[in-house]
Length: 130
Image (cartoon, rainbow, N blue to C red; front, side, top):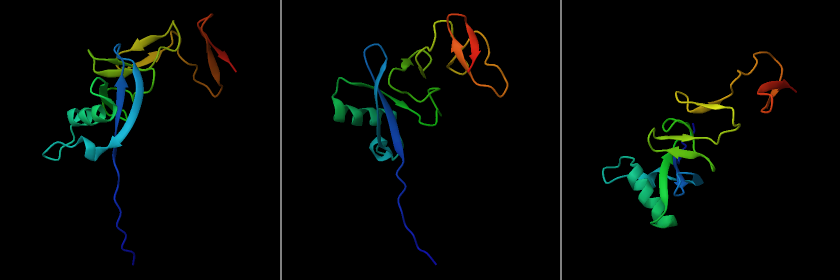
């Protein structure tokens, strides 16, 4: 018979934005640092904690490691779109377009469905077998 007692540490992730809404940093803080006076998780409280660490003039948005909200987990170089409240990865190629349902970039030609590997050739706007 084992009597194990342990504490699970759940973490919250926050993206620091520059003045153009570009992610310049992502930090992880304890969920305990995001709790309001009623014990509920609050992005506002988390942002205040991030500001206490990095300065009051810093800009923060919470991001979900599991992409449960704001479409994508933020990483350095991503853009925060305040109109749609989502993080968008950098555009990989000029010919690709943003799918505003999935909030991800799509090529003008679908990836071939077979067991082979391909890379995108932007100059010819096609997939090239590896």
